[in-house]
Image 1 (cartoon, rainbow, N blue to C red):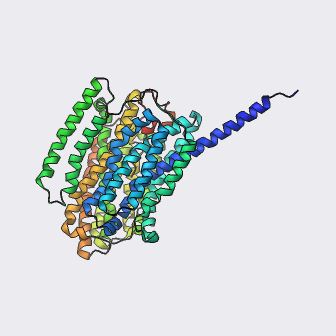
Image 2: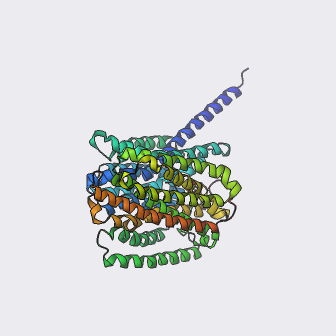
Image 3: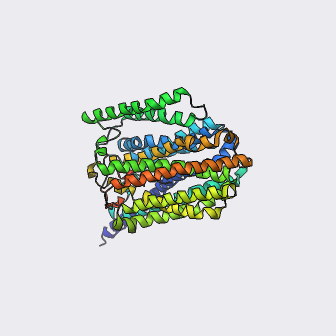
Amino acid sequence: MTTPVPAAHETADTAARAAGRRRWIALAVVLTAAFMDLVDATIVNIAVPSIQRDTGATFSAVQWVTAGYALAFALGLITGGRLGDIHGRKKLFLLGMGGFTLASALCGFAAGPGMLIGARVLQGAMAALMVPQVLAIIHVSFPAHERGKVFGMFGAVIGLGAVCGPLIGALLTEGDLLGLAWRPIFLINLPVGVAGILLGRRFLTESRAPRALRVDLIGTALATVGLLMLLYPLTQGRENGWPLWGFVSMAASPLVLAVFVRFERARARKGGAPLVELSLFTIRSFAAGAGVQLTFGVVSGLFFLVWTLHMQLGLGWGPLHAGLTGVPFSLACSLAAGVSVQKLVPRFGRKVLQAGALIMLCGALVYLGEAGRYGTALQSWQLVPAMLLMGAGMGLIVAPITDAALSEVPAEHSGSASGIFNTTGQLGMALGLGLSSVAFFGVVGSRGEAGGAGAPDALRAAFVEATGHALWWISGGLVVVFGLLFLLPRTVRAQQIAEQGEPAASGEGRPEERQPALVP
């Protein structure tokens, strides 16, 4: 007499294989989304001159094209994570991806600078809904013994995005597909986004936090208003002749942010869920780490914009030429990041990050010397030493900084601390882009408003001079970073994402917030 046991085993094996295929397809979907976000955060800089020529955008508008995305992403990051906890991570992921795809289409078909800026802000806001769900979905989709490999793949995608973003932007812009100039850098997201939505609806598994933190809408509104009161006049002021209202707005910004702090404290005392857990800043290592993250974000935001404009508008290089010149930077950054976490930090602690700041400072000074010596005749190969130094220095900082800053944070607050930390980096980048009005465009002056790859020699020389001025600002920022790093613990506790437990019911310790601190 036959027994049904083998059939039962066969059915179970078939179901297990099907579940395995399902989660690996789900992984491909969420990793693609993470790659899209990272590429879109870096791809635009290389196309800035093309955007300016095609749309007639002023330099302040160009700043908003990049800063608008960073600011919207930063302000929505924590709220997006909490919405996923409350309403379902799959639902918020698909909503974010759909909105991101729509915003990409609006960017690609933008009729002018105003529409492009609005679409970029929408794109950043949708990324803030999509990105925080990525690691949480991975966490609930894979058993503990597979997470190490999966999170390794996630790290590889992050590194690949950092390397590929500028190159993809250069190829698409230089290729001028169908005569669309810069627009394909956004339109390429459409087929990817549609495929991701269709596959995500079928293969992603829904999950929620049993007792998720509530959304702090008032705190978010206060933070948004306070930051805009600072960034808007800082970005627009030079173009408008630095009017009085701009200085009044910037002076009033700290007052609004002070109201935000008081509200957050009151909300915490009443047992609510504040947007920012201010008690974390009483921990010296976290406060110092947040200061490093903010300052390093300012340095990065300013450098990447200035670097691109120097190569294309100052030296007259095409997008592909500029993109290829950045390859040594990207490769050095990726290599140094991997070595720092795996080999150096466990042995030397915070000295690795301090060495990174000094190496990057040396790279900025080498760049400054080369730009001053050769002027508009500077060649790509002459920039290689500076690119290698700056890339290696950045890699030594960006990979271990999160664990260094969070090493003394209690485990129950690690999720809030990570979310705040990543938000701080994005805000720093937005602030750095705003400061470019003073550090870079103020030197270019009125001669730069008609800039382009075919600018006259005098105008190109103005961009080279402005680059030198901005590099002094960047160097000063790196000195501040170096000093703040002394406040971090001497040794850095190694924390691997894969070793963390399930997301806490309260929303604390969300693994999706344990992302790389800052990716260029």
